[in-house]
Image (cartoon, rainbow, N blue to C red; front, side):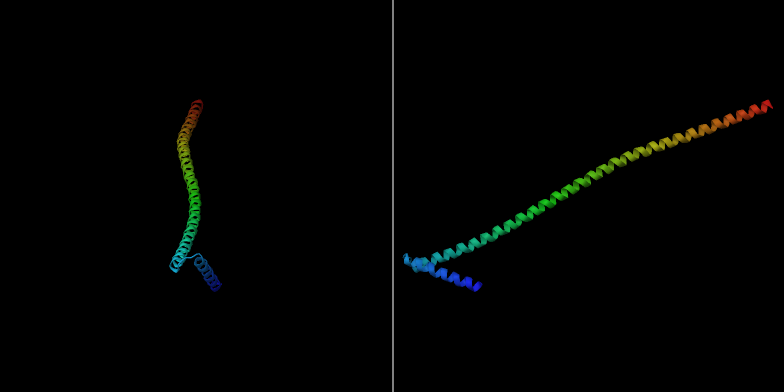
Length: 132
């Protein structure tokens, strides 16, 4: 396939040379034209390669953009969860403090009740002793 392409290029070159000769160009002018044409074709191939690389680079940047957006969303969710956890911990601490105060009050009330019951029992025992 490559040989076929080389043969086709050679035939095309010969046809161009005959056309230029028919138009009255000198051999130097024809050589200069063919050289310029070859340089233009090489330059075009290089530009096509650069274009292809730019398209690939564009695709990579789009993929990178998608990854950055996904990671940003993930970081936002993590940040939200951390803030929510902090809020829940603060609420839990307040509830624990309230429970501790309530437990202290409950102990005090229990001691007072026991003392009241003991006083009533002693008064009742004293009354029974006096009556008997």
